[in-house]
Length: 173
Image (cartoon, rainbow, N blue to C red; front, side, top):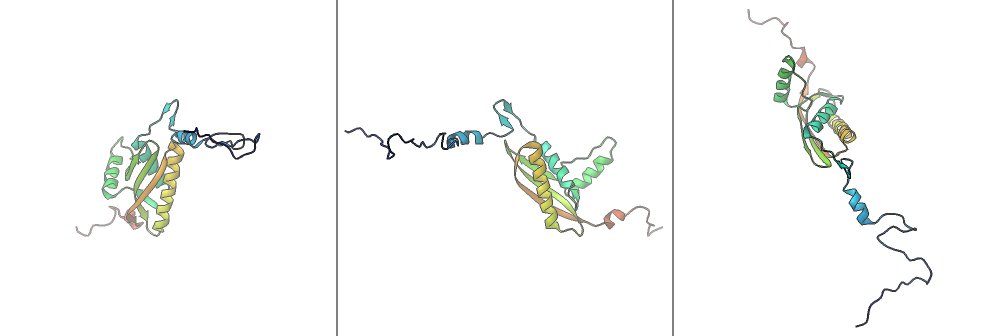
């Protein structure tokens, strides 16, 4: 059996091209080298890993959603009612994660946000603005890649909804 040798079709003395590595003509790293680094994220380095709790991402998303013009509140009806009671209790705080559900992985996050839109705004535009603001806030603050933000518009707020007060005369005496 004859031994098979690979012979180059290049002229003798001409530089040989290598594939899959770094050479003078093509300084890009091998695909296997890139793949090894691609698995790394700012949250996972050779010095250790950083984990971010779901509650942290929920709070960031809730604050980002509230910052969008045209969003009156975040959360469904029951969550908002419970939140209003909690805020009235002495020492009670605002739950910024109310109305936000997240799934956080090692390097990615998915977010669901329930909002109440103000009457008269273009709901599709408000939803897109919420989506953009939530994505940019989470990605800037946590280095997680946000793969989706689902916005659910549960209600429309009317200005006269807040005008109701106890100062109106009672219909019955």
